[in-house]
Image (cartoon, rainbow, N blue to C red; front, side, top):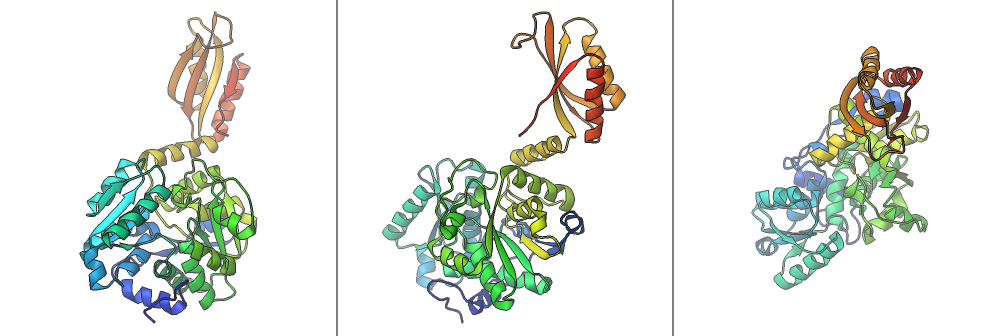
Length: 409
């Protein structure tokens, strides 16, 4: 029961992993969201893996792997390649267990992730421009120094650890009929699909990838969609998915949905605003898919895994402000006016009448197609709701001003 099969975990492997890691990782809450359920017209459950100590589910698989090392393997140490949550999981539990840990990270990795990983006691080696380069370097060091490589997803022991999430989900909500899981390399969904489909064969498992990185969907469905670009969901921005995971996903996962960047942003903002929970882009991908296509989940008992919460605070602030723009509460207006005394006062009077707060004002006199005697006054403003800004625009136009509203997309 303790020894996983060579290519994939079994339910017994996952149950053994649950016993093995019990008490060393958090049994995270699984909560029904009444507000999201009402929005989607379904019963929506959230599994808060962002509440793990390192703020991601990766601890489960990493710990399950580390606990099964021999004394000789422990003494030689382990090595992993990661620019994110896997690095911190291996580093944290390696230090707890007294196992030397080396993590190879790409050179462009944000310094905060490097220092957090080093803060858990790991030796960090910076190499290459991409995770693929770091992976190759880690394999070199593994061979040269006799370390054990801890793969982020393509390892049945790591998958078994991730699969423990599925056990907990069905324990807490046995009536679930659909589980939506983000896909990067595929380790999480492979483990969760194995545990849940074995226990409840009729349950649907839906995978979610960022629209810019449809790697697993291409592999499973024979697609040729382009892969690459800047995505909010960098945690699942994988160009080459796992070899072992793809076989499991092809067999057990019912479908793979893709989510656009604006849907990822919307989901991250909704989780902050409704659930008061900080979730990274990859961790919010499942909810993004549910919110983007609610008709595919209507009437179902659906759960998704908030698999990570490590998002840069500046990026989070940007996402939240962009959400306010999209829902019409913050706007940037370009107002054409004659460049003469009283013009700005006439404009600000309309803002006051409509109860709209001015955040920032800029005058553009040079770089404009307007006559030399005219100016463009750019105003960033916020209001209690979108209707207040719509009313403001109408009043400005009624007073003779030409108003253009900046759009995000």
